[in-house]
Each structure stands twice: as C-alpha cells, then as structure tokens.
Image (cartoon, rainbow, N blue to C red; front, side, top):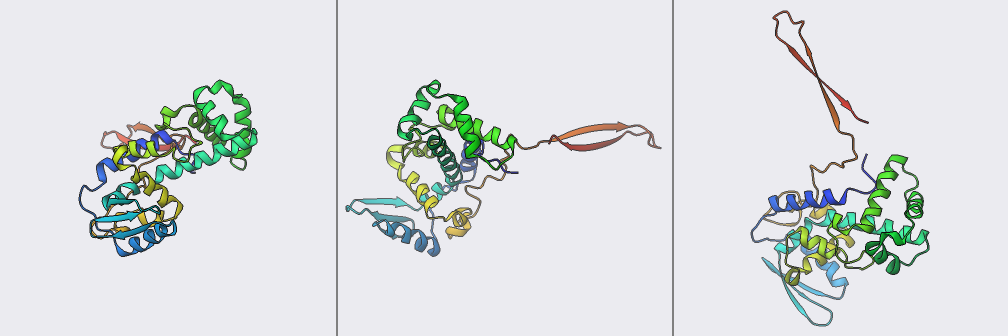
Length: 255
C-alpha cells in the first residue's frame, strides 16, 4: 500500500540518479500535441510562445523574451514526481498550521530555525486530524515525515522556507544539477506541468517528443522504506536419494 507521504530524501536521490543515467544529451524535437497543449497553457497566462525545431521563444506579458532550448522541457519532466510530492507535503503542513491556528508565514520559518518554538505533541495531534482515515501505522510514518519536512531542510535539500511560493526551485535545480542563475526557468516549467495536469503526457519521452523514448519522472525502483520487505529463509534438507542437499527457499513477509 502506498504511503501517505513518500520518503522525500529517498525519492530525490532516486530521481537524481534516474535523471543522470537516462536523460538524453541531444537536441529535442517536441511533437505537435505537446506544442499545442503546453502552448495553450502558456498563452492563457498572457505569454506568447513560438516553437521551432530545437528551441522555443517565449515572450512575457511585459515584453521580455526568453530563448528556451527544447531540451529544457525534457529535463523538467524528470522533476515532476518530486515536485508533486513536495506539494503534497506543503498542503499537509498548511492544514496543520490551520489546525494549530498559526499563520504559515510566521510559524513555518520558526519551525525551520527553532523547532522547540512549537509543542511537538500538539503538532502531532494536528497531524492525526489531517491524516484521519488512514490506519495508525501509516499515520505514524506520515506525521514523522511531515515534522522532519518542517524542521530539517537538509533531509529534502531545501533552502527557501516552505511558506514561499518558489520554495521548490532550489530542490529541483540541485536535483537536476543545473546552474540556478541561467536555468531557473526549468523549475518554472515543472511548476507549469503540475498545474496544467499533463503528467500523463510527460511520463514518457515518446509521448511528447518525436525523437526520444524512455520513462521520465516515474521511478520504477522506488520502494518506500516502510513497505514490507520479503524475508528469505533458507532451509537445507539432506534426505534426497542421491545424497545431494536440496535447498528450499521460503519467502515470508515481515508484514
């Protein structure tokens, strides 16, 4: 059963490795379906966009122009899974803030700088309400992770406090090994992917490019540390007619 909140540290590391090993280092040709769908989303924000074979030109509402390599749209797709999980964590944390009647812009920075400023037991009680409906074991894991998310930014490579709208930028850029000064827009593309709900399209390169294939943000080998791990028991029996040992492997679930 999936966890309420995934292990962010593990997910980020797995994603970074998957991206490093699988992201193609070549020119990208975006297919027409993606250009139309993503282009319409950008235009609804009062931006203009023109797609070319290997690049895109985006003009902001105030007339500023960005020249974007099409490869950036591919790079950003690998971060959508982590971004989605960061949003799930933030949403849960905001619900806790509402429960304990604290303004996020005040309490969230305090939690990072001095966790003792908040009664941890009161925080955990709020989590029980936020995660109501799940079983006790799942809730215990989720509220422990949410507390760590709020107080230990090194666990999820955080920098800016969670109350900020752009708190995810440093996480995504560091995970993708990008230079923030010149490639911040990659983080904005990830933001757009999340809010326009096109995760189904960018989950595989073959669905939104004409010359590439392979999984992007879906990490096939991610397994939550809290999930059951099979226990292997090896039993040797010596009663074979030919005298050889027979090895029987029994798999038992720790759950």
